[in-house]
Image (cartoon, rainbow, N blue to C red; front, side):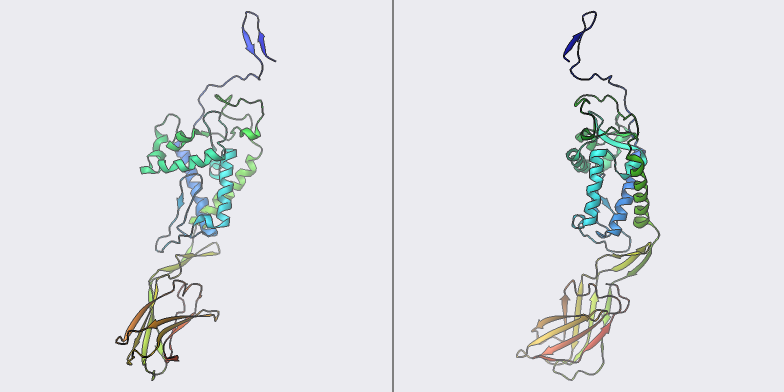
Length: 362
């Protein structure tokens, strides 16, 4: 419409709709609200880590600091979160929620929203990613996470770097993509909140309650744990070995703790299957340098599948030998597996030394 001159000589530009700007300070989310929201966030992350599983003790990003969960008394698994499709899906959905709705499940429950300070609208994907990376600065001595306690606008360092604030509101303004094209593009917001609660919020809140509840139950709920310490498993000679090696016995060593935890009917491994595995052979016979000597270990799983591990050996003056076994030798063998040790001299096997390991977790 252009400029219009009002009585008295005042000129007003009516090219764009005029808005009465609300200069009042918004209600910023308190530090306590943000901490409780982070705890809800951690409950979801713990549940995902348990159910996916990326491995108990794994770290992966949500929209606060990276979450880490370790179970006492067991070596944690260190599988990368980004190698798991389910976890990637949860991370992407959660990040998109905050980028374009201003909330994540935990923030929905607490009634807080992350928005741009300039126009009170959600940050968008790029700024959301930058804000998450900036939380690394907040994590230095946790000063940044404590900063909202004294900052006038309740900002962490990440908020300051990303130009964001966290509001205590259940009526966040929509992202630019979902708002009226007549709304101002820059400058202070007309209002810090929408007039009405978004229509999507009740359903999203119900789903968030479910996500936080299940996450807490699977991540930290009642559980039964079965734990096994490192063991030495001797085998038994069923008959005297009359061959050149005269094998007298062998021992299989596992040096990594293992265990299982069960929650709500779901069982997960605590720690990797035994990674540090070795076997020791003992014999009385005299071996010569002219003989081809192989120390042989055969592992048979509970399903009857066998794997053979051969170790060429040339120290004819020795009467014992210890060999490091493949880290995968005892992976997936199940309960009630068995193993045999023997010494093969010039393609002729000694009497087998047989061992069992019922109840050893793998």
